Length: 444
RNA sequence: GCGAGAGUAGCUCAGCUGGUUAGAGCGCCUGUUUGUGGAACAGGAGGUCGUGGGUUCAAGCCCCAUUUCUCGCCCCA
Image (cartoon, rainbow, N blue to C red):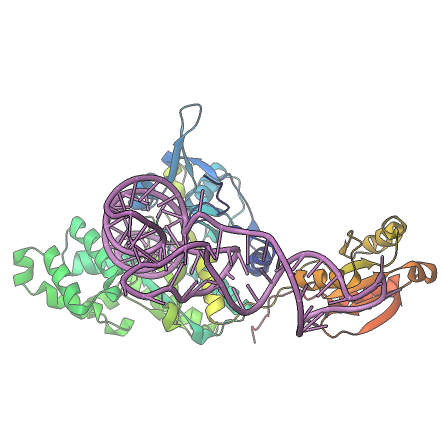
């Protein structure tokens, strides 16, 4: 049996060309979050099992975590999500933290599930949370930030849709308005969550299975279907329109619209899986018909910090996974070409040059250049080929003549052009060639 | 956890109703005499056909199991 070279199921190796993409994706996340005043934090990848019990969705804890017993007999989980962890951190310093607290992190998370498109076992997820803001300014800022990240990747607003709903509204509609029991509500939420994945008749059949005979006789089925047909807040029943949750939703949509976010819509069927959401939830969908799925989302979860036995803290946040995001960027052709960090590949000409060239290399490196030197002494053509294969755009030739004159030949492998310059000039030319992807602030 | 499809060279794949020493393109290595790449030419390395069993005179091809990958379901990023 030979040793496998494959990475662990559902996890990825990142070769330099992959890591460059990941770094770019993370850089945009970091810069955008920091633009809004969010500060980076981190935490251990291991947490005690109790942290997730009754806080995440039940299936994630019971079937999708990597759980094991450590040598001290403790039940340990490799974190499947970051929200319980950050809530724990806030609770630990509940009294002393300056609110509003704005935090972000890009942790890797593990879930034991069958890998498929957009879903792996290990993924990285930007987590952005604001603590201590009870008003809709929190939702507004969080969604605005999420939207700005998308724009900074170069996404246009017609490429994705931000869907909004309210847990409170759903509770009111299913409970007070339709009169469903708690158990019925829970089942119905799950069902509505995937109503767009099934055909209409199958959906109706399954809703009917949830209702009691008397509920069915009183026409509950029709009322539910009418309710779910609501495309806009105005389509909701008169009674619902006066609910505080609906006023909030309307208010938020208004705020987003004023912030030039025109692709946010109300979606009554939006549920989200986690149990801890308490109010407004949102999800961002890829509009590409090839990849028409939820990319990421979040919402308000005012109850989580309080579970640690401290005064509750109002919280809104979202999580954005790198796998689905990369799918989005690829399908919309938004990933830029990313050259390696190495500014130039140094090719030595002549015998025994390696030692002689060291002072020159050290000098250029001191001036800030990233240089890789070919140590093989192979024919020049092979060395150039190597540079080209590595994707390094520039080659510096150094031989006896160059050392004597203290001027070096720089070749651009893309254009084929060659120029001879002093070390100082080389450094400044190569630094100018660096292309750092920056957030494209298109707030205009 | 459930369902479907697929695993042949580093990559993309071909391989007839089972029939001798398993192929192509690309890539890789060497050389065309060491101060210039992407080309051309010449040569070369590389496969226990995912793994284990079975059927057969004979298995890359048929059967079973297993594993990995891909796609869906559940759930979710």
